[in-house]
Image (cartoon, rainbow, N blue to C red):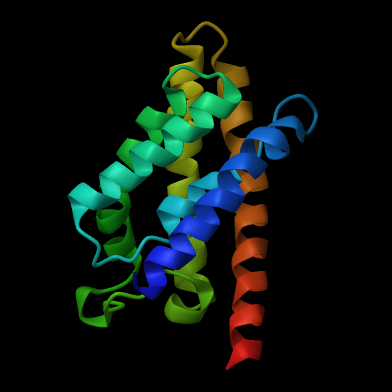
Length: 173
């Protein structure tokens, strides 16, 4: 097993139970829910094949659906998110500057490019989840409020996690 496989398994075993047992219950103002587990999809290397990426995204979403008792909402959203991650990545990083197998992070992309990439991915995910959850346009203001608040909340938490793992990686070097 290579280094990425070990990191992904450890992150999967940490983030999925944390999402189901902790983060789903930290709701701000009964509106914002942190979706920290999508860091699993966001941290996948850009050079990883689309089929494997979509499979890992689906399994991550399905695991959270099992913990959260949400029938397929996260599985569908993670599958779509892992399908569009490569085009979204190339919006902010040119193909010439490709990461050659490394995961997107503040260290590999730089803070501005990673922040844009992370915000776009989190916004897409939250938009999909809350639109599927509502499945109607009767109370569109609440859906928009939940999407924006959860996007900001999740963005801050994932960015902090990425910065903390960055510091830990730098200390080991």
